[in-house]
Length: 446
Ligand code: ATP
Ligand code: MG
Image (cartoon, rainbow, N blue to C red):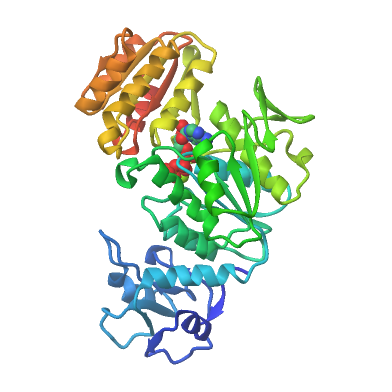
C-alpha cells in the first residue's frame, strides 16, 4: 500500500497539537506539499520557502478534499482541521523518516559532487532487473526531496534509490538520519560548491556525513579512484566497504570499446564516457553489497537521464551534439571534454560557459578547463561566459584561438555557419547560463 496513516498516528509521530480536528481515526492516504497535486484524502503540509509559503494554500487544499493541514504555530487558528507543529519542514522529514521505518527493503542512498543523478538512474535500471524500484524523481535530492521520495515508498517496492544533494555542511547528515540507508554510494569528492564550503577537505567531510550517520551494519560503496574520498571515509566509517574504480578497487573495471570488463564478465555500458563507466561500476558495487548476481545486467541496460545530461542529438550530415547543459563544475567539465575528444568524428567543437559558485577558485578552474581543451587537441572553442571566466578559459586554451560571445543568439548564428558534416559539438555550462537554449537554437537552425 502507498502511504496511509491515521491522523492520530501522524499527530503522535509529530508530537503535534490539533485544532478543530474531530475525526482522528480518519486515514490519510498521502502527504502533499503542493496543493496543485493534492488528491482528496491526503494531508496538505504547508512549507515556508524563500519565495513561496504553502500556508497561503491551506484553505484551498482543504476545499479540494485534504483531510487535514499541517501548519506551523504562526498560522491563524481558523475553524479548519489543523495539525500544528513548530516547523513544518521538520514535520515533513519526520513523516518521511517514520514511513521509511515501516519498510524492510534495501534503501540505497547516493551522494557525491557529480554523477548522483546519473548513478541513480543507472542503479535503478540495474535493480529493475531484480525487482520493483522506487527512485528519486528528477533531481529532488534535497531536504524536501528526500522525504518526498521516502513518502512514496509502498509495499509494491523491492528497492529504493535515493539521491542526496547538499550545499552546506550538516545537510547530508540530516538526510542520512532520515533515510537510514542500507547501502550508501559516494560517487566522488570534487569542487562543486567549493565557494561555499571552503576546501575540498571540507567537501569530503560533508559527503562522508552520509556514512557517519548511517546504521553500523550498512555498507559503503566508494569510488576507489578518488583518494581524498577514501581517506576521509576511513576516518568516519569502520563498517563494511566495497570500492570500485578503473585504477583499482574491489570492483575494478577495464574499458573495452563500448563495454567494460570486470573479472570474467563484460558488460555493455548504457552511457558513453569514462565517468559513466565509473558510475556503472558503482552499481555493480551495490549489486555486490546486496548479494545480487551480476549476470542479469550484462547487456541491454537502457538508461534515460533527465534533460541536459549525457544527451546526444544526431542531426543531418552526421553532425552530433552532446548536450551536457544541465550543469557544470570542474570535474564534470573535464569528464565531458574527454568524452568529446573520444567521440569519433570530424572536428571536435566545445561550446563552454561559466561554471558558477566557485568563489575565489573561479579563474584558476576556468583556466584549467581551457588547458584541458588544449591538451585534448580539440579543434574549436566557443565561449559564452562572464568576463573573467571567459578570459581564463581562452588563456588556458592558447595557442588554440577561441571565440568569445556575449549572447546566446550570437553563438547560434556562428555555429550555423561554421558547422561542417561530421562535427561533434559539446555544450556545457552551469545551469543558469541557459546553454540549453543554444542547443535548441542549433537543432532548429542546422
Ligand atoms: P546535481 O548536484 O546537480 O544533482 P549530479 O551529481 O546529480 O548533479 P549528474 O546530473 O548525474 O550529477 O551529472 C551532471 C554532469 O556531471 C553530467 O552531465 C556529466 O557531465 C558529469 N558527470 C556524471 N558523472 C560523473 C562522474 N562520475 N565524474 C565526473 N563527471 C560526471
Ligand atoms: Mg542530481
